[in-house]
Image (cartoon, rainbow, N blue to C red; front, side, top):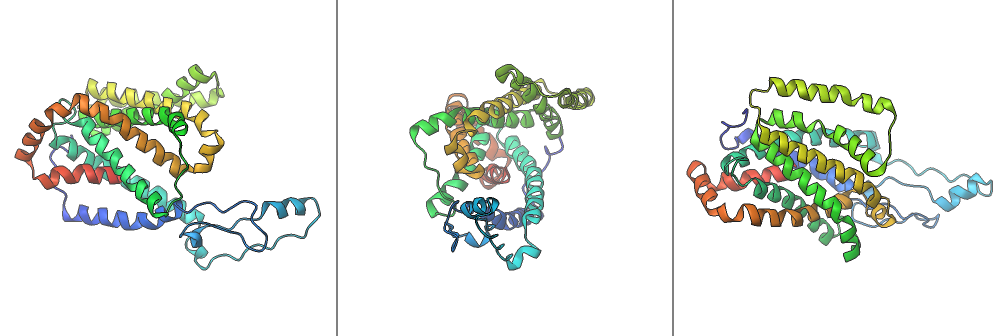
Length: 327
């Protein structure tokens, strides 16, 4: 296990985490910017939210329709913002991709540290760690809604029920992944999770009857073959990791396939991708809590005593928090 012997977070790793937060802040603010009102008066496009200066201008649809019909002159393009030369959509996407990869690296490190301290995947507090990680995501999005940084979705009980399957399968996908990464080497867990596209393709055919072009399925052959070959060569092979990763892959496939029907609803589209993920994350926490209480609550004290005998309370609490932030 490449992370089994790692000690407390170094100063360099701590500085990297702080830098990650600093870089993520402007990108997160841009993602939280509400969309502009469609159909606003021609003399003043209106926007809500404190991050209005970061939004890209749009053209009034009424005037655009008139222009296409020849009934109005072309609407003048709005001048580009002064920062567009060094901060635009292309740069933003590139930075977000880089942050995603960086966050994934540190998630694997902190997640493995957290699991090692609380007993690992076999008899440890795996679901407790997974739930804390999801809870960090919920604690990130809720203040954004309360402070008005991101427009809060207008959710009703019926809407929460409609999104419940998405949250359920998201909880299964994350929990299974954490178990798989804790049961074996991180590299082995990631190899097994690479089979998710194959699960999605089969699940789509079974549940919806949609069959893709043969070229799509042909691309799965090297993925499945690569996973099989890598598993044969894996020195830290674990059947628990295999089973947990397959559960995670199937849950992710069900989330993607069944979630498509929900995402087509107008009220879901109006929420935006960030709020969709936020609501699904909150539901995932709620689905994980009963699992934690049923499987791991009785051994919390014993696991805590063993953990404190190996590391400080600060390290035990810090690693799940940092892994949740990176996730």
